[in-house]
Image 1 (spheres, helix red, strand yellow):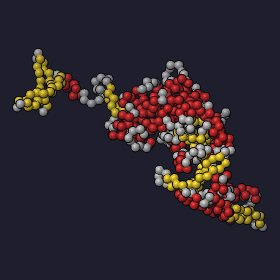
Image 2 (tube, one colour):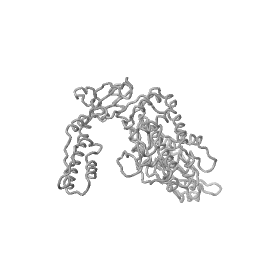
Image 3 (tube, rainbow, N blue to C red):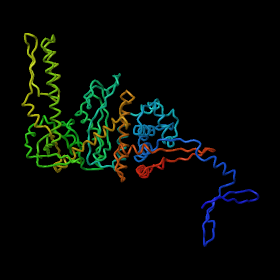
Length: 546
């Protein structure tokens, strides 16, 4: 049992904490600890607990900073964009911007305030004036499109040894914006919006990622009115200049892409210039005869991770100036959904036409004006040819007649539930081709990350010139790169965490600053960690930032 006792030296009392234990029936002191004089003990008791305490965001900023060090991001950028030693370097400024986009994407005006509430201020000693919105423009105006490509190329050299590039996935997307037209502006244009938004300008972005882990390797920001086929042609040219980097890591690379990028020259250039194999899909309207294959011949089967079965039939066909393996797939659930959507849209248009028919008998509009109205209803892209109609003049005005074109509907029905896949890699088995194409959704998941309102958040852009939009897009894709490399590291642990779960656990890890009451000594402690957080901190070695 512990007890207090004192020793007197030259008339002064010195207090100790001791503990006794019986040894051979005799109580003997086995341990003692000096506590000090009465006044010292009084001061210590009065000073228990910190005089001040501060809590900083730690887990997510620190883990993202660790990824930046892992790929040597700051030095890579600074080699391309050197700057005199004043304030933050361009590489450091971009790094903080990227961390912000992952942790809490904010406007430039709120950036300095966010920084002050993170543990990053212990790693970057910088005045708040160096994090103003003006400072953003000062740094960003020095970054050209050529600089962005050089940085991407240098980062490729860093990350290629760490990732699997055997299968790559390409997909373009766009981001709608309320930015109005400005002088000398080219990027922000009206175009076909992939999310169906009408009446807004947009910025296009193409993305190349690894099928494994979804790590972005290259991106290109381009005009909102350029179609996918044209962009893919330019993207091939950009990749051709860096093909030696990719070929060092893997000799037989397969590029997976959607049918929107298909053209004779594009498919030929993937083979002749990039030396990649292709796995893609064909446009149904160009290969209607393949839908005539009876279902009894779909004798091969592919089962997805979710247990969904897809039936397949394999053949060969000369497409895009060469023999390709063709896989026609059939999925019952897809057939049901496609038929349901078509029938609903068809019935809706028929109801609209019926309503219009009753209103145009006494119409004062011209026949051409009425035909335009009818066409907008009956000739929608997904209904084209399904409704036959005729507008005739009558004594009382106009008479509209219409009906379902059953022959076209029956032909369209043959395609329900089916996809046509192709590849120029004749050694791939049917199951491998279907699996590769199904897993192309990894690039769609990364596009969702770019559009997520909580992580990265591409829009709103808070900038409007072409130059600044390109740099903004670059920081967003770099944030995606950091995020996917972070998840790749987390996947190496025994933890089975989704991206959202991992980010949530990291966000809950805080750094507490405890200031002593009678001096300026500061102690740094992490908040209490659960088992998952402790594993993340240890695996990512985050304690080095304490």
